[in-house]
Amino acid sequence: MSEALLVVLLPLLSAPALGLVGNWRLAARLNFLATLATLGASLLLVAAPMQAGRYLQVDAFNIYLVVLTAFVASTTAWFSLTYLGHEMQSGRLDVSRMRLYHAMYQLFLGAMLLALLSNNLGVMWVALEAATISTVLMVALYRTNAAIEAAWKYFILCGVGIALGLFGIIVLYLAALPVLGTGMDSLTFTLLLPAAAEFSPAILNLAFVFLLVGFGTKVGLAPFHAWLPDAHAEGPTPISAVLSGLLLNVALYAVVRFRMLLAGNPGAIAPGPLMMLLGTFSLLLAVYSLWHRRDIKRFFAYSSIEHMGLITLAFGMGGPVANFAGLLHMTMHSLTKSAIFFAVGHAAQVKGSQKFADVSGLTASHPALGWGLVAGIVAIAGLPPFGVFVPEFLLVTTIAAKSPWLVIPVGLGLLVGLAALLARASSLAFGPATPSPGEAPGVAALVPLWLHLALVLLAGLWLPPPLVGWFTEVARMLG
Image (cartoon, rainbow, N blue to C red; front, top):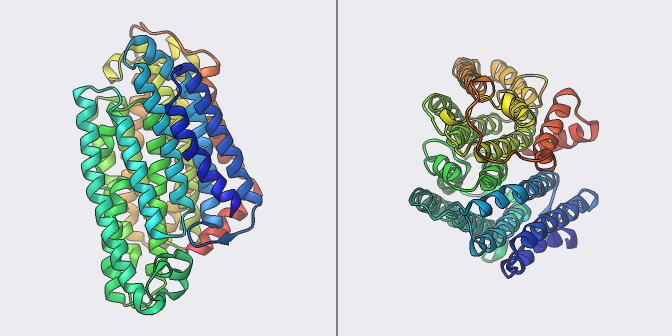
């Protein structure tokens, strides 16, 4: 387990170190190097043996999410180099806030990786709480009234959600006590899973309801989503990228782990219909809300709710194809949505605003940035040849075969969302060019944007056989 421990410790030890660096330019570079080191350590897990200890585990499900998390965190840290430099020059941030940002960024990364690699439900809960607290501080970084309000809403709603999740873990512990006894065994996932069939179905049902609501709040599932649009709109754009691209995945990962426990007990309620209901409701609410947004970051926050709803629906449906679609969709959404926020962050700095009315004609005024944003929107809309099309196609065909009654609401939701995205893409990229008081991003600043889009395009054209085999193995494991 030394590789897994290294992955967790690198960012957790980097956090206090970066908090002491007074030179913000140096700190930004060190932050990027630290995330790059974490990415390198995460790649070691690919060749490491699958094993489980008392507190950490390495299996096919969490390895790919660990690598994905470290990769997106690295490219976001690269994007932050230019983005935060502009914020410093404009006076929106100062040195003390930059120190806080870099320290909390590494703490956030370490907490997410610990949650993914945890084999102990208590440790997972602590890690998700640490991720919440660190991002609350980053959402409030600008110290404006709106940013502080958004941070408080995020803290209160996710605090209530994580408290309900803790209660669910306690109830699950009570269900395991008669079978596994007192102590850490009743909180160890790899021991809980094979013994789940012996747990009391009634207690297990109660635990899952609290776990689904509690952790579903952090996923951003409706109607527990109210924190997410505000946090995206008011926090620094790099935080929007990692919130949408990473934290939502980690919370959903926890929900799917708990679903596996419930599915292992033949007397318990089926977890799938509950997840499908929340997923479908999230999709429909999000696509309706897309038509009423005037803030670009808030708009794409609702797009994240839409896609997390689709992914939750896929895992709720279950089966090899739907699970494969959910796994691939998590990956494609992380890469695409973070790329979109990279483009939106640069566009907001160039135009001096993140309102749709003030950002227009990007392909004429800033072609590389404008066409990158267009490609990102086309990709997240689920159009070929980009990779998001593949899991959405697999999901819709699976719904048609297994739950035909869902085809109409899901298909209608996808079409309404597509129309909203294309309408906004038209105004952002091809409308009359608005004034551009800010400095245009350089070529190096756009590398993370185009790197993500290249990977999403490649996935739409060709999936490497080892990756397909990997996802197939995990899809079977999830049941």
